[in-house]
Amino acid sequence: MTGPSIVKLLLEHGADVHTRYLQGKTPLMLAVSGQDSIDVIMMLLEMGARVGDRDKNGHNAIWHARQGQPTRERRQTIAILEKTLEWENGEGG
Image (cartoon, rainbow, N blue to C red):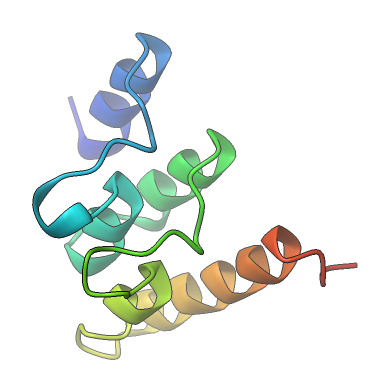
């Protein structure tokens, strides 16, 4: 099984996308700061993960995504997160 298929299986069986881990990080924050694919990140967003949630240090998923190497995939991820945050804040349209 690949990362996306494992995440999908967990979500289908009730895993909570709003669970908090060490330092108050959400699964979305962990996904964007690691090596997870855009597929995993999109799956978390589709299941209701919130970009605007903040960890114990006050950082959201966009901040975590910006901490990595500026690869093409990471830039795409940041663009998706920024657009999603606009929608969360009622600014999308």
